[in-house]
Amino acid sequence: MDVDRFDPTPIYQQVARAIRTRIESGDLKPRDPVPSESQMVADYGVARATARHAVALLRSEGWVVTLPQRGTFVSDSPGTPPST
Image (spheres, helix red, strand yellow):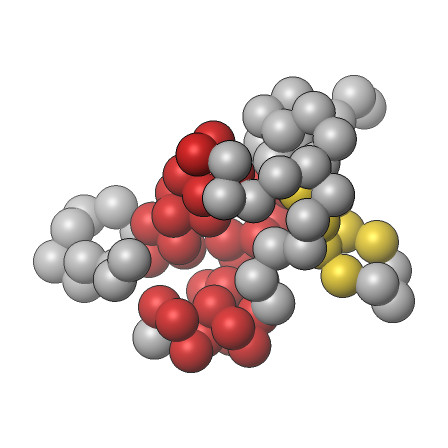
């Protein structure tokens, strides 16, 4: 998926939507690693900060979890926001 730079939707949200779609379709399953920031930069042609922002959005929505020193993975219950 390419980002649409003429779409008024922020680019980080477009990248997050692409990854969310992969999770919903089963392409990425619970506990699978999500693409790294470097991979997102290469795949979508975005800045590293944009990729980081997309992951932060997915994390806040409960789609992914980030484990220090290990990476970011699809949540065991994707789409369920973390409890505070």
